[in-house]
Figure 1 (tube, helix red, strand yellow):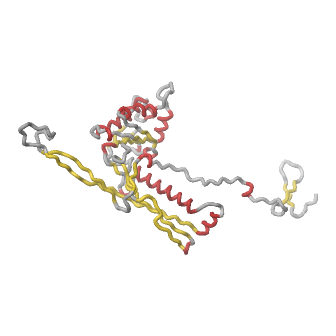
Figure 2 (cartoon, rainbow, N blue to C red):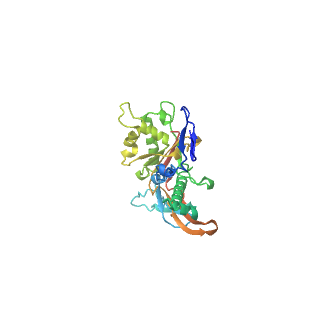
Length: 336
């Protein structure tokens, strides 16, 4: 067999003889680019991530560049009188006098900032394939911004002694009682025992609020594992409704006209004393719990960096710490 120039000879295992193939770089009219033989998905897949702060707390926007945010509170009391209630007799000259005590609380505000750097050469290359490096990095900064808010909302900034929704030492904490099985964990409790835990923490906020319904918890956070258990298990062998639906339809708040929300939160996992899982019940309302976004994320300045052949854009925002305005309307329960 004669082998011509430009041809390669390969031995194919399991076959007799030899197979001649043309070198793609030499053979005329038979060269293909890899990009022409692939199916390209034009989507740019981003990292998996979860941000839940918009669901669990109210953000108050505006205020400008500040160091702190503040709130005024007032307490009322009377002095004098027989019983301080204001009920007097016809000849009484000892009448209670109303007093008001006004005080101010302050909370820290943190500055968030990221730099977006777009090299000129890389920008030109990506434009050739229809992508914008500026848009890609902008999405990354906004993701980082929302992650920072999530951290501040749920755990605060521990390095400066600031806490969040899940770890405030001023919140009253109780231990989940043991069920008939001898365990406090929901996976070992009956639906009625779990409902008793939920009603117990709701009632605790109601009682602490002097039975003011606006102080009764309407929002409960539990770890994802416990939430999955509530969703996946039925109340009875009949399989009519899940434990979660049973709780939502039969809780104390529902009876009083308050719509209860039970939500999963990864921040509750291990947040309790001794690393136990924690349930958090509170009033999800601007008048009870909120935080400030005094300056939402914005581009504050852009400049070219000639020595690096790049454009630099500074992003900045200001994020306030969580403000629990009424500690009566929030409770923790550990060990669920």
